[in-house]
Length: 166
Image (cartoon, rainbow, N blue to C red):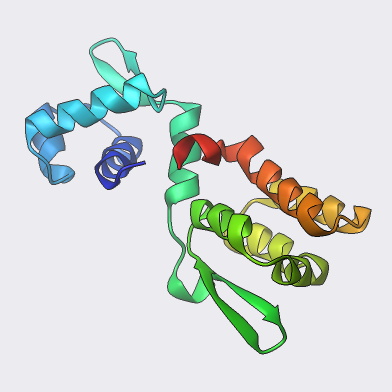
């Protein structure tokens, strides 16, 4: 998802009353034509739906907002190979987390999975207890290696359809 699209989607989700295109364009720091183009693209991709003369954020749009909204630097997920052995991967969004899970080494992935780090971050930071429960079930089932990676990616993609967004 492009940065401009994210801005349009975010402002639209936060707006509580109708607003004319020029006012909306100023809020997202785009021209009216650029804003209209982004709205049309978002609608075409299913993030917005036309309702009467306006647009509303769809469930897919709400999922995209959740997946791309960053947490604070202090709350970001930092990947480690082991105790006191950081990798260079950090995730501030669920989308970044998804991408990191795709590329992180299996030793790091298993280290965090079996310490409960993933489920804790999902529950406490991302406020996603359902996802945390699914990851906990993966851990207690003893998933290892690429099977664990596929499981984590599937858990995230099932809820957020991240594959469609990246």
